[in-house]
Amino acid sequence: MDLSTDNSIVSFMHCSRCLDEIPEGVSPREWAQLEAGWTNPGFQVWCKRHELNILHVDFEGVKHPATTHIKISPAISW
Picture 1 (cartoon, one colour):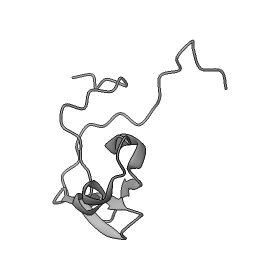
Picture 2: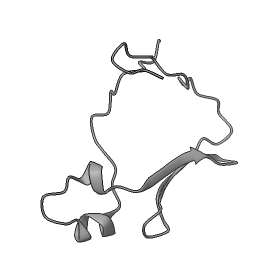
Picture 3: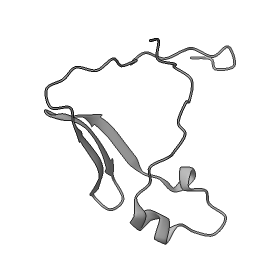
Picture 4: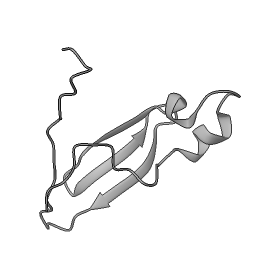
């Protein structure tokens, strides 16, 4: 199965504390301060604003297919 490089997210993750504090007129996407990365057991999403774990997945030693490359859009110049 080919994994898309397009935004295929169907349900977003947010820090619940950030959502409680979001200023009026600001979207959760604009307000988010999340980091995501690989850990020894798997993958973690971290809130930089509150220094809190949002998600930590333990892959239990199983390798999963992943797409880690980007698709260059003609509208973006590097």
